[in-house]
Image (cartoon, rainbow, N blue to C red):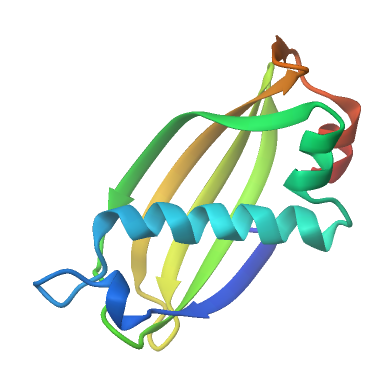
Length: 129
């Protein structure tokens, strides 16, 4: 899959569980942070959108865990967004930087609300993609 954005981060010790691997919930944080960086790179922030009454909310989240990350591993989050009907879909993946091993793959379906009401997309969000 072709990704159009990526960011690098490093696993922090406190993100790991007793087995010494990243706790599954933290992968969602990594992916969310990547989506935020993606739109920030395009000059927009979720906080600014919210102040205008525009909220992009997760409607569905599907993740497949493949290879665990461990403390101090550097990882790369990659994403490719697309619009499917009224939803914005983010195809995302996390790779371990040292060997490019796929650690997790996700599909995040988002919807847009304007002043709390569901809308069929928004030009500002369309422009980001």
